[in-house]
Amino acid sequence: MRPEQIIKRPLILTEKGNRLREAENQYLFEVARDANKAQIRGAIEKLWKVSVLKVHTLNVRGRMRRMGRGHAKTQNWKKAIVSLKKGDSIDFFEGS
Image 1 (tube, rainbow, N blue to C red):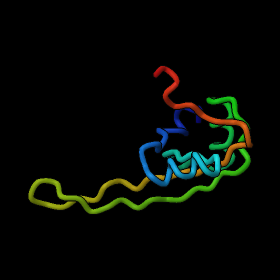
Image 2 (cartoon, rainbow, N blue to C red):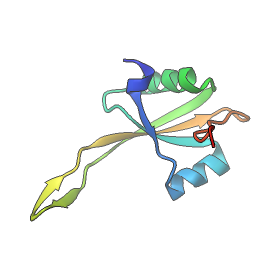
Image 3 (cartoon, rainbow, N blue to C red):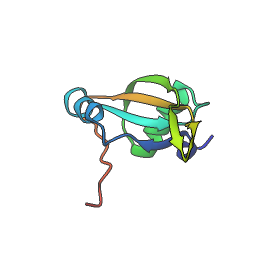
Image 4 (spheres, one colour):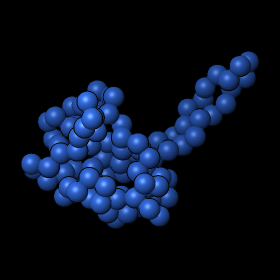
């Protein structure tokens, strides 16, 4: 799998994500469901040229949502919490 396929999107607009990024130098990502910790570590290091210390992963269950008159379940997805070496950072809004 290519790094672009492993890392789907950063989770930057959450309160927990902001707190982890500012206080503990940890970043949240949505990743491919079949990716393991070693693949996630390699993808982060290759895409952003940083040193990864730890990777924690968790599977997030989909929720029941209203779809018209009925109900449907959203997809399950995987979240990764990536700890970076002190001094490293990932700038998501580098153009602004």
